[in-house]
Length: 242
Image 1: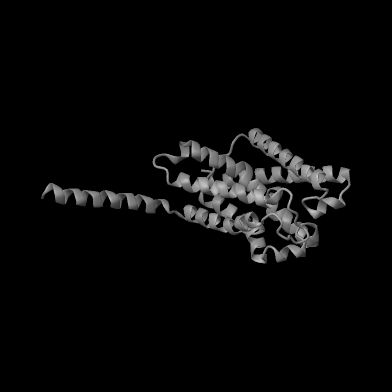
Image 2 (image 1 turned 90 degrees about the horizontal axis):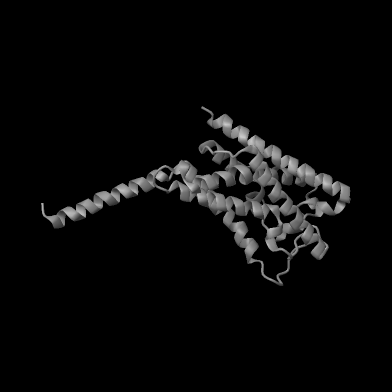
């Protein structure tokens, strides 16, 4: 066989091997992550599409943009995580020891799981009691109801699906809780800054609280996030313990 004939066949065999390896990477977890990225896109596009001067419905104000809402911040963190996870899945060699894998595990275990659970459960609890306290009906003219479920419902099954199909390494509890505490305080100072700047609370519920009740409410929220972190850690151990 001539060298000219051998080279194309060799190229085809190598190309086929690479394609096969790529297809092997398209596991259920990677498919799930792709679906999650697609799920996050509509809300992000809608939020970023709001321009200065655009008329907003009562219950939404322009200062701080979407970055003042924990729901949006939660979606951004999820977007980053699932993007890192998809990239990590395509890495050659031992992925478990890579820096990228360690970063995405830390992000998932410390922030994505507890904050995601918190957003879903607290939102729907308050919504069921009185939606005007958390998501006024006027917002339905700006965000279609299906987008509300994309933001506040689908988060939980995607998180649980990730826990079930992929093990994650948890950091030391004291380090995780310290990171959660720092981020929680940063968000608290951010929404207080918004209130002091424009005289409006990010969430209508907060205007009904006295100062002491606000302190108690924020402490309760941080306690809930801590419990959700511990719950996620226990669930991961239960599913993946040998």
